Image 1 (cartoon, rainbow, N blue to C red):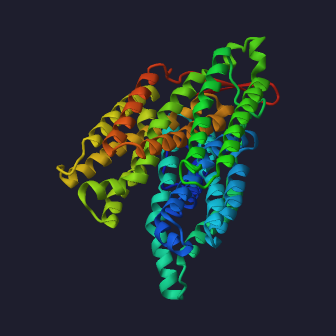
Image 2: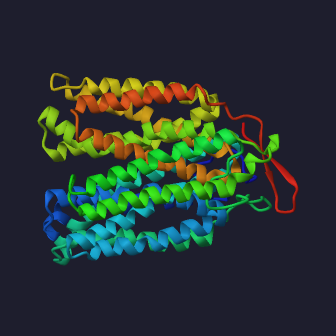
Image 3: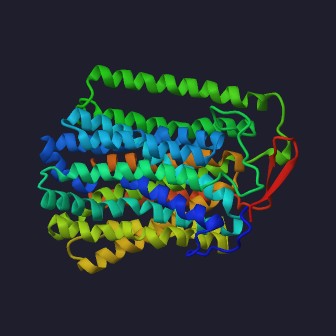
Length: 493
């Protein structure tokens, strides 16, 4: 760990320099990932897109992020966050430029599908921050990383339309949106160099622990082996759901034959993953893992479910809240969008707040309180109708948003305390569950009323609260083995 003590926001040395560069990298990934959202109307006009084609772009933008977060988590644990984040930022600038140069729907669709990979950048910083901060500061540090980085999507929404208008007005270029989108790609490319030059994977003298095997997450008991496979199923289910949305039954981007091939491919991939998981963990069926090297995978499973309800609902609600306010209170879309943006704006303080509460009062207790608040918040939102004063509806949404985003901060205050060398993979799986939640909730929204949509989220928060009762408060130490065979004990409280 860095010798510097405390979290000094205005400092740009030691661990604080790494924290600031980490949230900046994450900020840029989210600005790139959602650079199309505030420009959709002009992009649709420029490329001649239909309503269903616009919806398809939105689906494709999140499709690849579910497997990408798993893959990037593994690469981070294996090669370190310094090189992984640098390559991700540089490589993902390419589909960003592709989207800026797209001349038709198919070119734009391919670019948005590939850009889903940049949504996995979040996972890299979780491991980086965990290497530099001690357990008693980790929740706050991870909360700052997540909350300030997550604000990249809101910053893109505020700035990119203005940049596009500036280019059109002062340079006489009709398609200013292309330059606004391209600018985010250039930021990503340049920052990949800044990141690589200025960070190291660990403080000087610290060991970067890597998994003993790669290709699948390590578990340490037979029960955990089967629980890991069970927790993989919802991710494949979400990808199947996305395939269905793109099939003739949905937006008709895929033919029936292509959709069938996609379904079969998912089944084959799951079978291959089961095989790889057994290859990595088969030894646990013949010999017992020593007590000091064990960890409980149920900790990961609980955090997955909680992130499904927190980040999953945030992504879904951000997508629908402007339309909700416009429909319920008969507002124009610009005003409704401004009010709805307050929900995402809460990220700046709520997510760091959730991490700070975890550091102060304990991981499990904080998560129980925030998850209960989350359920009550969405229950309150389900009762909003046109008879409510608009100000009260906005305050209710912001109050709910606090519990959602503080809950996200509290989840990732616990993730790095489970097994250090697997932090990237655990963060990847938990992060992927957030995207699974978004896919499920948005699918539910297409079938039910706004009120029922909020009630479904509240119900999943109640399920999360119940599973939380089975979580064990992180305490004591994590045991890791250095390359020379010596043992290091890492404090987790």
